[in-house]
Length: 259
Ligand SMILES: [Zn+2]
Image (cartoon, rainbow, N blue to C red):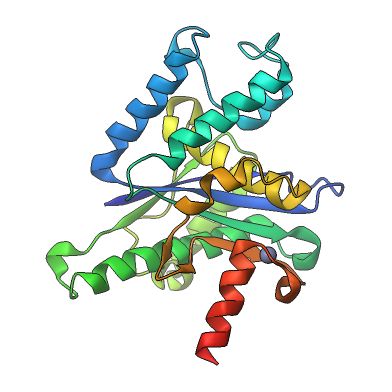
């Protein structure tokens, strides 16, 4: 089984922010232990106290107003985020990143969370479908997927009702052929991998909201892709034809090949 740990970045309601990002990391069940260990070791190397008490939450580290980040110079705090993303970059090759960047105004009045949630589930489902195809449609090799989300996020209730709709009506969720269950909501404080989802999603948000590529460039090579086509990163924007972000470039190359 593969688990896709998903988190959001950017405010849904704040009109001063243009983008909302939903993103995360898909991890094969046997790699979960190793990924957690890698991140724990990184947190221990910071020597800021017991690793189990330190949560990696990008916006909190960047702000630096809470312990243990309070008092650490901003430059060092941003380096901590970058180094944590280096852990993501060098993690096992089967761990893949996914993110959907939604230009909120373009999708208004539709809910950007629902929209990006459907898109990311779809992308994850297609990744599992490709594995199945590659195995020669061997049912013994078929992998199921499970989406894991942070229950403390304030969009939890919207997604839970969406998940309920999927479960009752079956149609949209049913069209995702490789999912084992509807999404699970867990506590991000207790899940190191949800913290990785938070860091990567924040890196993508910085890229689209502020054109700050410092963090995004670190991890771009780890987004789900095959044969040079980027499947794991989606930019939903009115002007995607003129956009030169990796997602839109990949999309226009794909379109020019198929048309
Ligand atoms: Zn783009």
